[in-house]
Image 1 (cartoon, rainbow, N blue to C red):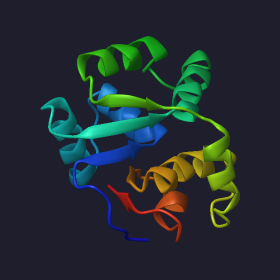
Image 2: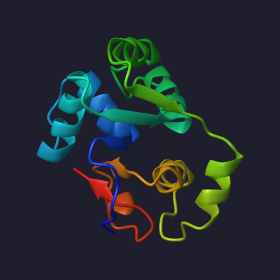
Image 3: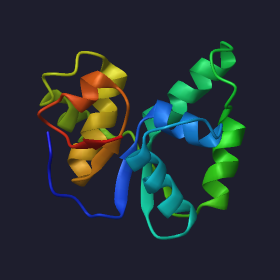
Length: 135
């Protein structure tokens, strides 16, 4: 889905944030969004579920990025904002019928609720008719 959203404001999914924190390769548009964040010219919202996934995956050795590394990245980039997992996000997720995995639905719901594109490589989120994406 493509949709209008502020050109300098985004929501990130777990993998996009991890790739940036670990300084790994990512899509050009995603990279540009994070570079704009780091230059103070953009805002990226981090859903609470993304932080929880990073904790879970790092504790199981599936990521080298830790919650501490992500927290440090967010401190260095004050326009990187937490987006709470709250009732409004959960209610928005109910409408997203084309993303089966709950964590991905909650990330997409955050983007939908805020009216922002989601930075993601995830094909399920990218193909959703309910949220715009970039990679």
